[in-house]
Length: 331
Ligand code: NAD
Ligand code: UFG
Image (cartoon, rainbow, N blue to C red; front, side, top):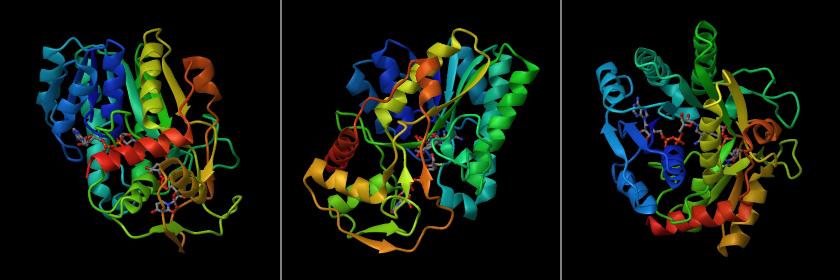
């Protein structure tokens, strides 16, 4: 049985579907700080299977003790945390408290209940401004904002935990840019307020909830001057978690994988792909650079392919169409 912390969120909900579709039993704990309770029913509707759900905070040690006592958990996938880079610069203490404390409380509960397999949601942000592309897992790590530092610090904590107990198996997954939604159109990314990320902003412009996309800078060193990223379909990403969890069954110790496609697209590539895939227009203006943004970021997906047998298969068109479908369905 697998425990998903933050399992009602964007990536967690798609991973829950992937795991249930592959006959895994799933328990979710989520405090609903960035998700809605109806996602639980939606996951069950898509899969036709039931999940056990605990509403509460991963930092609540008594709750975690109860969850591990009541369920035969063998693997934990730790999604819970705050994730907005800009917000983290305004309320850093909340970010450190939530992301780091939740991990520490979880690790203590796992230790107490002798649960030794953990998959952790890290981010390509830990590579900072990488020296060259594509990015390999052994590149130097750095962070330029509190959110990124929480991921970096947690990775270090996990290395210490593994060093102290080598029988602890940990897969650190460094996600590139997750986009898209489940093909059913009933779960997807649904940020509150004005979206920070590119794809949810595009879908809201395409559905006329927002007027114009602001393209943050067109003077980067890229083929058209706009920022290049490695967008990966969230259902491919979800499959990567299944593969990582399977890998942990063979006691690999601590392992680190990029989850990306290996291909970079610019902001304008994304706009064009969206317009042609979804037959809608996405008006935009060129604006100032967003502070902290880098020119280019894309993964080497080789290690995950070789060691996990994981390869992203969904196309850019799939990413655009499924994002649009979710936005239209969730008016
Ligand atoms: P999300 O906000 O949609 O999901 C996180 C979930 O965790 C939410 O449902 C929220 O309610 C819950 N949560 C937060 N703090 C909690 C706590 N203390 N106790 C219980 N539940 C809590 O985010 P997501 O996009 O699904 O991201 C999942 C993980 O992946 C996060 O750790 C995030 O930092 C990481 N990540 C995300 C991206 C991305 O672009 N989406 C990229 C790299 C890494
Ligand atoms: N962009 C725009 N306009 C927008 C939003 C974004 O032009 O309204 C541009 C950005 O400048 C960047 C690209 O679109 O060039 C992608 O931006 P996102 O905000 O979608 O994604 P980031 O690459 O900045 O960051 C994301 C997550 C981080 C994570 C990082 C690496 O938000 O949490 O990917 O995984 F750390």
